[in-house]
Length: 400
Ligand SMILES: Cc1ncc(COP(=O)(O)O)c(C=O)c1O
Image (cartoon, rainbow, N blue to C red; front, side, top):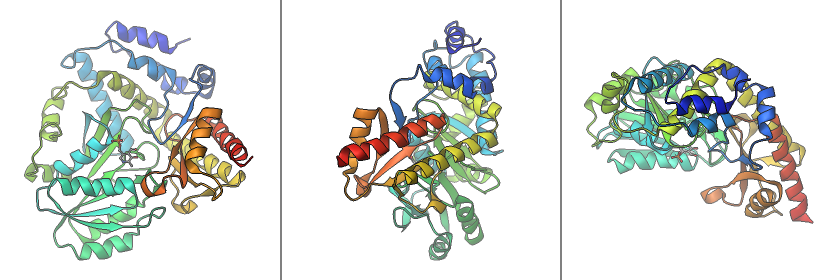
């Protein structure tokens, strides 16, 4: 039977080889036997996600020439697969950066100092997008919603009407700090109805986990990151741009160099990156992208929705309450309110130290008040069962 070691060996010989069916690699049987070999820790933070062994093996593969034909084959395949997953006929690039790099790339490649920007925020990452736009000298109007709620497209409409010549709207799809998913399709429609503004989307923790048909929804830049639902280590930011975004690039005057998509475009045409890429992560991401295509994007999304539902049902079963209303709850990260009699930080620490399950804690003003359970990427039903059991036992221990 094929195994990850074989694949790694093929890579150490320096050849990018045709890979066996990823459906086989990710089949429940295959995952179940690999599960035993996984580290004891059940990493349930909202990214980086834990990785199956075949992906881990690839990270240890031998280096190749990033200006040679093997790399060209890899980058062309990755670009096509990434665009397929996002449902876009636009352009797509891979940068050696974390997810924030994709947000910065969205801003610096489409805007000019003094441009008017509307920043929609429902949490910590929404604020960050506005901060990035501000850092590059754009004039940012912020519309903020209570943490735990989704953005209201009608309020976005009203705010936009007060911003003449708005150049772009920056918005988070899935707010990982609160476990809330924004109605991006509706927001995008409002933006296009009311203005010529570009829609720049932070899809770091949503893409490949929840539906995000970029072209159908009229999104202009979508930024995401390898360590989330894409099932790869952190280190590669992924950026997709519509034709409108590319037109904006041509007149954008924000200074840029490392994140200048013009350089990425020029080099992609000859199957190369402008700068030395994080090859080890590229190997893993290339494989995972193929696995997503082979499993079928619909199937992948259904799987994410099922794990999310399992998490929410499990939390309720042990007497916990979801932080956001279920109608806006994220399908990649579940935020759960910590009961009044429990110290949230102690809950996270005890579950990790005693039960080997690592939850995410609350961020900024939600520190100690919520826990977050990540269920993006490669997640088995038993990972979720284990997490819920750990939370239940932890609560009992802390109350004893
Ligand atoms: C929605 C969202 N945006 C942006 C980021 C930032 O990504 P990174 O830490 O990879 O820069 C994250 C990371 O968790 C995120 O969840």
